[in-house]
Amino acid sequence: MNKALKKITCSILVIILTSCLSPSPAGFWENFQEEQQVEHLNNQGPWGGKRIVHWKKGKGTFDKSEIIRFATDNGWTLKSETTFDSYTTQKWVQDGKLIFPLHWKGFTPKFDFDYTGFKEFPRWISGNILVMSFTTGYISIDLETQEEINTNGFIILNEKQNEMTL
Image (tube, rainbow, N blue to C red; front, side, top):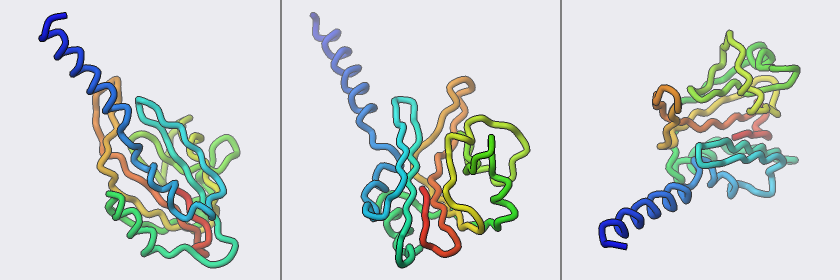
């Protein structure tokens, strides 16, 4: 094999290996209060995926400032906080199951379209909730159109602050 072919082969191999080793945007949350985690759905692949973690405290509450600090320490930046009342969240249902209305273009609290992907994001928290949106530094790309959007991470906190979902 000549030198040029060896360089090309090595370059391709390095690109493939390093792209597959890139951590997922939310992987660090597995280390946040592990003893309180009650649900964990993870489906990561070479084309992206999802990670959903749900925490529940038997006693006590989650400290919002601690959540924000943990996210910030891991490269996420708080973008916004929005409270949604139970009148709004009770509409976040698909096929009889509670969902978090998220699709590849982002969080859509008032949706008027049917998107089967919503059921990929179950919601274990009902009632009034706080949704914290974070920038993650990752992007999503529509493979058909090549459209790129920034990928945000979301934390849902219930009104009593004893349940939390990523």
